[in-house]
Every structure is written in structure tokens, then in C-alpha cells.
Image 1 (cartoon, rainbow, N blue to C red):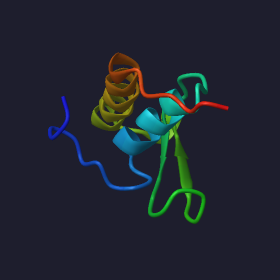
Image 2: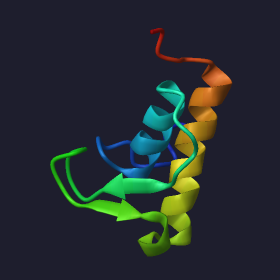
Image 3: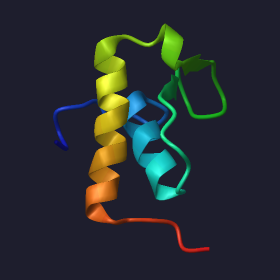
Length: 70
């Protein structure tokens, strides 16, 4: 799926991938600009397309098996 979604830092696809990478639970959200330095948009305020992008980022990272090693 890479390339289909906007992969900007803080966006839905990026946040999905980051949650998977850090082994956080699936929790659709994104930031309006940079992660942690802008407004966080929660699932109830996201469009279907934004939720799809978040889930794709999460699923893509899961399929790659790229996880943070603590």
C-alpha cells in the first residue's frame, strides 16, 4: 500500500505505522501538523479515508515486522 497514502509526519498513515512500530494498540488518530507539536485529531473526528490511512500504516508496518527493540 505504500505510496497510496500521504506519509507526512504526524498524518494518519504515519501515526498508524508508529503505533505498530512501538507496539502500541491500534488507536486511530493523527496530528494536524507535526506529531506532539500540533492538535491531535481523535477517531471520532476523522473521516473514513483518514481512518483507512491510519489502519493501512498500522497494517503495513505489521506486515514488514519492523518493531522497536527495547
